[in-house]
Length: 361
Ligand SMILES: Nc1ncnc2c1ncn2[C@@H]1O[C@H](COP(=O)(O)OP(=O)(O)OP(=O)(O)O)[C@@H](O)[C@H]1O
Ligand SMILES: [Mg+2]
Image 1 (cartoon, rainbow, N blue to C red):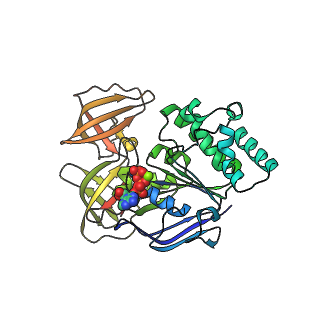
Image 2: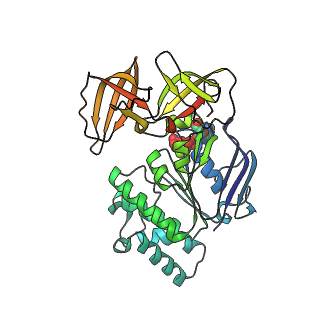
Image 3: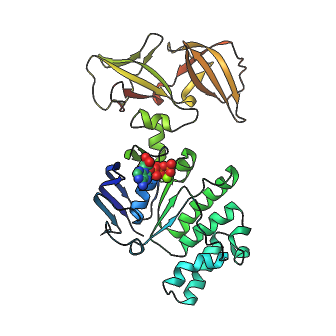
């Protein structure tokens, strides 16, 4: 197992600064996910770790050694691409063993590794087939198998499941998690799918414009997003946002705007605020309490604009003075569209962001 440490990494591609001064510390044996919108630099970062792209500045350390300028084959890594990149003329077994054969690994050792990988990935019955005669999911398994047989300390995955249908994706996702347990290798996994990121990652780095916005456990990132971008990138429906002002006075804190006033006294502010402070209050749909007025004095009134039945719960969209507010309803209460209803915000679960910098307060 190897750690991966990235220090002040800068990457320029065709005159663009794609990554600027990026730092990331992946522990040995850890499963880290890089998550972010298309074009934010995820693949670029991954490929630079693999040694497929030259860095403009900074350092990449793998297993405690400076690998910034090392040859890809000397880095102790294996990379799985989104496109399976299998050799079409070779059968599954040869596809998996190809790399080992060209670097002169003894036959018995190759056989041991291929058999172990094909057991893990249930490829045994398919070893003699050509890629053209495999399903997408099977092809991706072979591509993963090819990485496993290298017994690399660090495995890199670039959106390996994005070409598969939803059901297969969920299945392979579970297998990958299992595989990580079995192999104990360090894994760095790129995706723009938040569910994949949340379920796979021990820690995840949320990226935007070549900059890591937050690097932490999925739980912490979901519950205490570092800024508005992270807050809105995760969650579906997205976090509800209310613009307003917050004021701390005499040990109390009140958030207010034209239409609402919420006591946020218990909020763990990072620093005390002076006077009225422009801010955005964020609350996830599951933390909007719909239809129960608990008499706490902070209930708002809205009209129901849409109800989406999701099976286990309902998403209720509320029109609150022209703003759409999403709430999740788990119980059986009767709610009808166009009706007027009360809702409240679970204040222990809110996030507050600076109105100008958009950073968490
Ligand atoms: N060879 C290149 N020359 C110039 N710019 C490039 C080059 N390759 C990538 N870029 C730019 O670098 C940025 C990051 O690209 P990258 O492929 O790393 O994004 P990504 O996060 O992997 O996106 P996706 O989710 O779409 O795969 C993009 O703006 C892209 O246009
Ligand atoms: Mg990419």
